[in-house]
Amino acid sequence: MDMCCKPELVRFELRKAKMKKAREKLQLRLNQQEYDAVSQLRSVPSLRPGDNSSFYEHFILSGIRVERVEPGSVSCSFKVPSRLADRTGKLANGAIANLVDEVGGAVVYEEGLPMNVSVDMSISFLSIARVGDELEITSRLLGRKGGYSGTIVLLKNKATGELIAEGRHSLFGRHNSKM
Image (cartoon, rainbow, N blue to C red):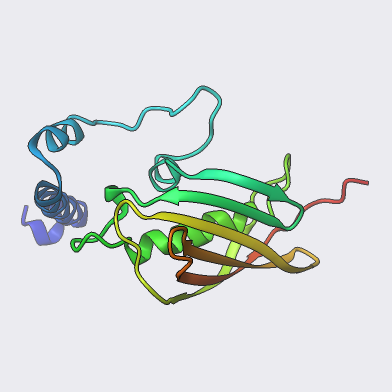
């Protein structure tokens, strides 16, 4: 039967082509030993017993250090790793967006309750951070009304004090009363 008559075969071939393209891009960014190690992965193992975090969360947040936690405020430090850099060695905008999402969500997280979901994010990219730069990431709760929370997240270069990005992050969580 012709491929055009089997949509699942077409989808499979498209996925296969995308994986080949991703492998080719990885080869450009990784040395041969790193590429071989990644190529051997068949599934993503659990990071820690009982840990529900995903590979994605581990990939983005690995290396972040929580410096201070106060009600309505979280402060972290983070050394920019090469895995989150673009081709020119700068912290990728997508990685900045992920950090805004994760650290902005952390400031409103309450132990024992489900995570809030992101409703809206706006990010101003003001400067660049390079691989090896030490960043200070602070998140502050702007306000809360019902299940809706607003946060602001600032990413600064620790050495220069230069503001790399400012993110405003809105979240929603419908939590049952504890009463």
